[in-house]
Structures are given as structure tokens and as C-alpha cells.
Length: 193
Image 1 (tube, rainbow, N blue to C red):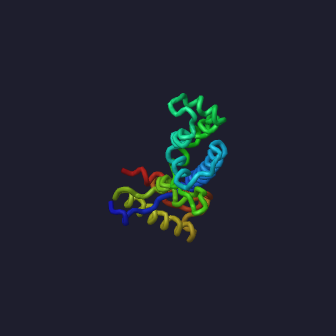
Image 2: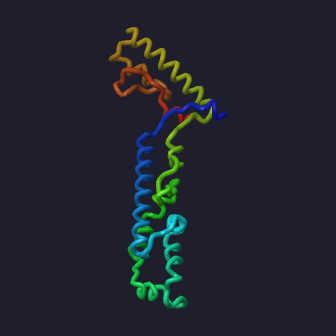
């Protein structure tokens, strides 16, 4: 089926809001992490260094600190203690949050603050389109049948209080929230093979 022939059946607005909220939270989480890393490492990171933290996490921080070690060939923990640096809180934070900001298109703005630069890729999965000719045919039939039933209801050929009996036949129709009008059933149409 050609892309231009596909019809949008439904949008999962609840899931879109969840993804957007998660993306915003991940940006906040990453910006907070950068601040914590700067406190722990007693520095202000460059743009490239902030990207390194975003992309490599603790591996970047450990590599960044190595040149400051008094005993370069010595134990990492000993060198960190000499420097008065405890990486445990950062490690714990990164383990819990690293995957969140890796899932979203996050880049730094001109002020060095991370932000979303595009719509998260996961949102594309919140849209359901017809995928084959039978679904397309089922949708078109559902629209036609719904129009006829709704016209019959509006013109009083079918009493409104009995409309639900007409609406609920077959798998391609459903009723609106008031059970007074026929509408295509996107969930069932999307399952047609």
C-alpha cells in the first residue's frame, strides 16, 4: 500500500503526552546531572565535555579525572580519595537516568543547556494508519455505513434511543460516547488482515 493512500485511524494522545513528559523530564535530569558533575569535579565543563557526559556517562567523568590523579598507575579509588572526590552519588544517578536521555533528541543550546531539538521518534508509534487494502476498504465502508445510519437517525427513520442496535452490528462500527451516532471503529479496522 502506498504511503499517500494510508488513512489515519487513531492517535494515542495519552501515550503522546507520556512520551513528551518523559522527554522533558529527561532533559531536566541531564541538565541536573551536568550541574552535579561540575560540582563533584570542581569545574565548569565545555560544550564538548558536556556532550561527553551525555554520550559516555561515567566513563567520560573517569577519563576526565585521570590526568588529575597523583598516582596515575595507582588504584582509582585511592586517587579519587586523595582528590576528595566521591563518584558514588553520580554513578547511582547515572545508572538510574542514563537510558532516559539516550532515548530522545537532546542537544545543547547556545547557552550550553540541553534541550529537545526535535519531536521524539517514539511519537510516530502513537499514530495508527491503515496498512493494507482490506483495512482501507473496511474504513471506507464504515464511513459510508455510519453516514447512512446517522442520516436515518437525524431524519427520524431510526429512533435515537434505539440507534445503538444498528450501530453495534459488525466489527467496523462503534458508537460515539453518547451511543447516539455511528462512527468507524479504528481499533477493529486496524486489526483487519
